[in-house]
Length: 164
Image 1 (cartoon, one colour):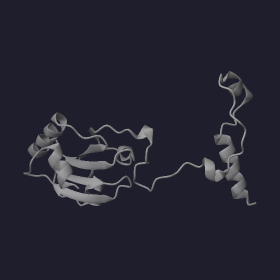
Image 2: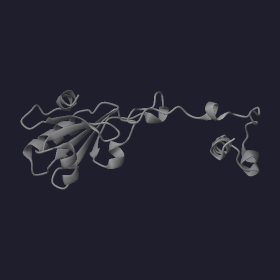
Image 3: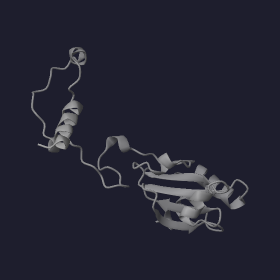
């Protein structure tokens, strides 16, 4: 048996609830029938990178419009992540922001506002050359679709439709 397998089995046993006697004494529920879980039985199923775990109740993601952060962009609970390259001095951007704030971002979708003027690395990464640009990305940050909304219909529906 390799040392790596021993470590995996030890971690599985620890995560299965092998806590202290004090923790067990305060638990009002009777202990479950003893069985030795195998590493295969106790390991949770993993989703492919960038996808929402199937049926994870902790992944209820109400639609949101928020400021950009790398953590928010990588949140796998959101199946639709759209970066909005916004400049406060831009009338087009202000029009889109008003439409987003007065509209409804559907559950599972997020629109993250990126400061066009200061986020030069993100502009280069996604090849954004004008404010009022929307970029759909996956949870790994890979660009899926770019849409320049300059002069276009200003609505959440238009943003979602043009970035599919």
